[in-house]
Image 1 (cartoon, helix red, strand yellow):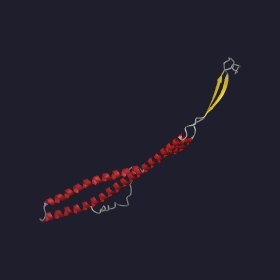
Image 2 (spheres, one colour; image 1 turned 30 degrees about the vertical axis):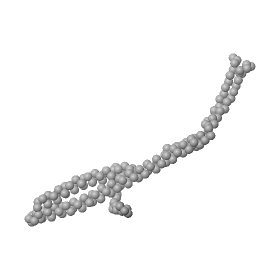
Image 3 (spheres, rainbow, N blue to C red; image 1 turned 45 degrees about the vertical axis):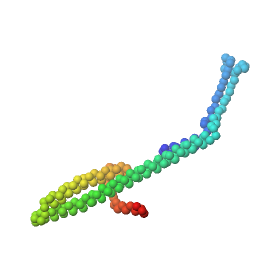
Image 4 (cartoon, rainbow, N blue to C red; image 1 turned 60 degrees about the vertical axis):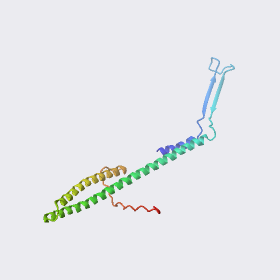
Length: 188
């Protein structure tokens, strides 16, 4: 709307100012007529301001610059929203990938707990191995809660940015790509 309004102001800036019409009446006598006195006059004046050459073009150019600035601001806002959506989606993918990784680690640590129990019962392992594996399982529960909070935060940001109801699930069919190695520069 601001851009449409600014586009309408540019032609208006080129227009001449409004002309003015004036009426003057001077009567030295007492009657409503013009009378016969020397200073009795009736006059009509028409005035049209004419700005200095190039001033209207400069004003129109200034309004056109305002239009360009508003168009650039709109494009910047679109890019900012797109970047925010991409960041939130990446955060959501990362949280879901972390959750899957934590599930895999939990499975491995629970197997480690079982193996440590079997070794301890057979007299070939130490209790410390079993306790360490159980501590890691508890640590993974804490990480799972943190990842759940990160996922909920990313999901709420995505829903807000895409104008969806809060709590609406957001499907993620893809996964994060592996980052490519940084290119090696010759001589370094």
